[in-house]
Length: 120
Image (cartoon, helix red, strand yellow):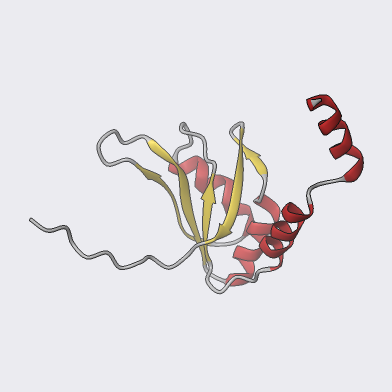
C-alpha cells in the first residue's frame, strides 16, 4: 500500500499545500540584509560558515550559534550582508543546498523579540 502511495506521488507531483507554502517562501522579499540559516552541521566552524557565504557579497557578520554550556553548534546561524541585494543573491543560491554534508535552508531573519529578564 505504501508503495502505491509513493508511486502515485511520483506521477501526480507534490501535494498542493506544499507547493503553496513553497511559492510563498520563494516570493517573499527581504526587508533586511540579515539571513537565518538552519540545518547546519554540528562540525561547521564560523570560518567555514563565513567562507561558504562570502562569494555572494561583502559580509558584515557570519556566525554559527552555539550552546553556552557545551559550546556545540545548535544547528543554525546568522549571516549579515552590507546590502539587501547581496542577501537576496545568497538566499537564492544557497537555499536547499548542501554544506558539509547537510542540507541548509536560508530564510529572512526575524527581529529579536523582547523577553523580560527572569525573576529572582
